Length: 162
Image (cartoon, rainbow, N blue to C red; front, side, top):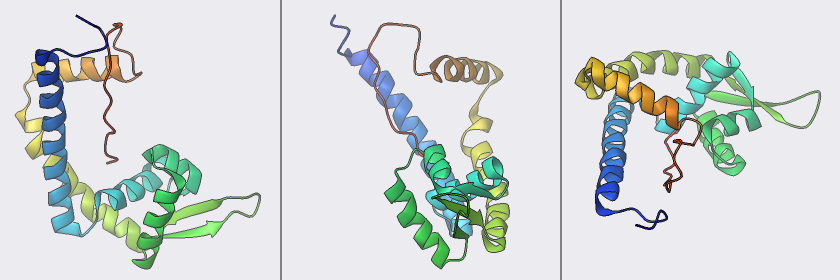
């Protein structure tokens, strides 16, 4: 078989994996959005500002951490600023913009975190056995660098940013 093509079984596994992830992720985001009004992108921005930047990050660092281009992030931040979740400040020392979580943004994030945690537990973690966790951990570690150690083909799927 040509290593540049997937056979029927490999495609079935790929679609099953991708579909399972998307289904679980979608349920987590739906519960969060219904309870908080935050979108997936809102939560991703607020969470990264809090965890990676202790409340603020350069706009480019934030875009990089989310795998978003500058334009997409800029438009999203404009919507979040209108809702007073974040604010942007020009940097004094050089070109660039600092994105800062506001008190309202921090409150929204604090309200969302337990809902997200509960949804992840309900839709994912509670479904796993100890053996599942071990297997998923090994797979995640092996594929994190983008190399599975084989010379087979690799298909990519952009992971959402939550």
